[in-house]
Length: 169
Image 1 (cartoon, rainbow, N blue to C red):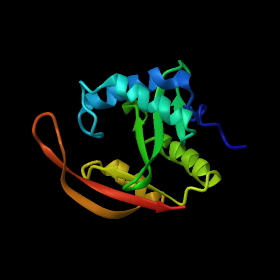
Image 2: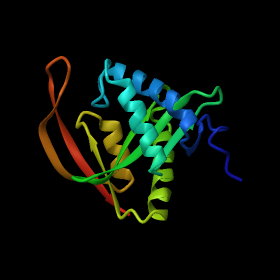
Image 3: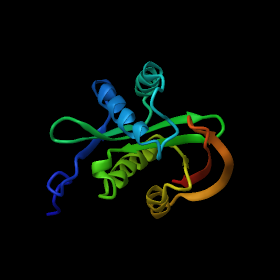
């Protein structure tokens, strides 16, 4: 019998609920504070994000969390359908859990949801300097579709490229 994720030091992944929204926002706060991995930076409109998460949940979008044994949300994977990209995912993992397989567990949960809901492909945007995420996405079957130079302007004035990746399910 294989050990459970918790016994390997990883929180179990489950479908997100409305009760997880505040914990998800706290994770957003922490990752945004790092100013490296996501487009969101400190000072973002927290209420707008709260509403977006709640709306996505009410619409039955693929939304998953990883919750540590103390109840803290340490991983979040959300999906939404965009006109330009189709079903697109966004993922956050607490710094203490990165590189340990939690992102892979979150993505596996989304892949199962997507197949059950007839989603033909998933897309994502990632910064080129996020090498760990690029390795994960590539290992899970995502391929680079396009690069967008000077796509995101940061609060400090820096301008970053993004990479559009896609996986056919």
